[in-house]
Image 1 (cartoon, rainbow, N blue to C red):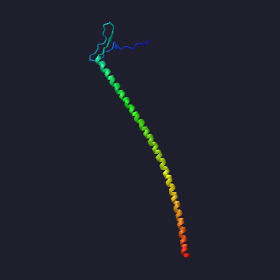
Image 2: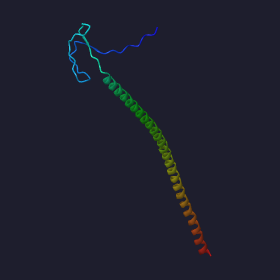
Image 3: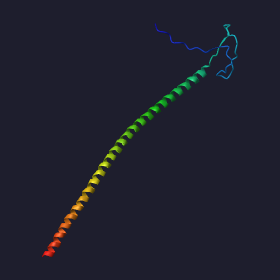
Image 4: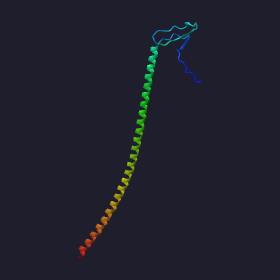
Amino acid sequence: DRAEPPRARAPVFDDAPALPRPDGTRATGGGVSALGSREQQLLIPDTYVAQRADASSRIEAQVSEVASMFGRVAQLVKDQNESVERIEVNVEAAAADVEAAETALVQRLNTMSSTTVTALKVGGIVLTTLVCYVFLV
């Protein structure tokens, strides 16, 4: 019931122009194979395949490393976002505290002004009473 996995085979070129081979030699195009057909198979040396597999695994490792770096950067961005949100909340709280302090200072200034006026009134009455006492006595 299970389908067999596809088998790897060397690429087949039909009347392909001469392509460079991995070993540096050039294939001759249009030749007739041992079977008598016009197809020619380009056989790739095992060392070339091993080099390609090694390069492929290195690339895979580098891609994995880059993905890991992106994950770390994403975590840093998330952490920074949380820090910025905390700073924003602290700034808003500080602004509210400054407004409350300003209101309290204005109220205190108004209270001090009215206290000064009251003190001057009381001082005037006391002074008037003293002057009247001195003249009458």
